[in-house]
Image 1 (cartoon, one colour):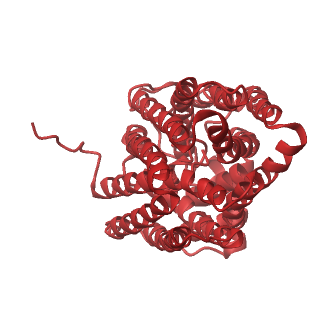
Image 2 (tube, rainbow, N blue to C red):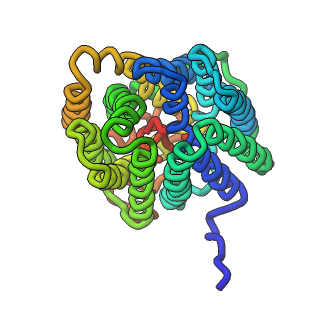
Image 3 (tube, rainbow, N blue to C red):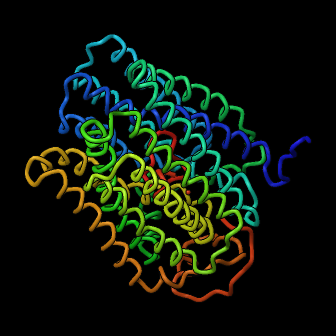
Length: 447
């Protein structure tokens, strides 16, 4: 039987989804490969954290500029240029590792180049995905998009872990470089003839100030961004630094750790499938409740539980965090004017990632100071406490789904937040990741 593409899944949506699947296959394994490349070169836990931080620092620095540019230039061109930069940086990284003598400063520099590319890619990508379908179908389209992307992460993480164990991390990094090249090629074929030209802005600073006003006028938005500034930082420390170390010492190496990450990916696929049918009335109340299970992986690593139990914990965390990711993107798409979406998205990403470099850089020293087990329990406790605090914000509990189009200017900034709109049975509607920003996660999962 021939499978027909849904009527709402047009050319651009299909190309964007295919490109996300390709990069998901390469990048989920590359995240594991980068950590084991540092360890294989004789690096310590602190060195793993420094290389991870080197990627995130330029990402944080250039995010706001990337968002402003994405609202000024054709977004697909910004995405393709970023893919080219990521392809080059990962390709050189692979050559150094395969050559056998990568130095710490070289790996950190290449990670920084990759982070720079992501800073321009992420805000543009979030604006493109939801602009490729009509508002009536945006929820289901985004859930399907993430289902494909997260499904690729399942195979990519499991295959990446197996390949690292079999042939080393260098070849996994090379696969990621090829994936970026193919994704850039797919995005180059996006049809943008019907996209209206952007109105000229009043300068970069004015554009950024305008985006800032959009953020601070919505308590539900800035409170959740503040929450994830810390949540993402501790998750990054736990999974990018402590996770590989626990895997090496207690779980049997990169293979079981890759399987656990793949289980998280499988959970996100199940969560996305659920969100194609589930239409919560209170978007962020449901989403915030689903952040609590994100505290479980750090606790499991702290024990540490056997590999099988860790895999189960990661699966549950993947389901719940995917529900949050989709409800979060539904809220943004519903409340933020399209012409300002990339700028608001860049502030979202900035808040979500600002503390990640510090957390990953300090993960090793903190482990030396208080012990890895205590550090992991602290990560778990912070996630639970911050999520409970966000649920105390009235607008988070009361923002509801509606079917009207997103507001067209900042005068409508308060619409939806703190008011009880009527429930609407529209098709149900996230990343990093996923955490806030997840629609754009080509090689990181910020949320």
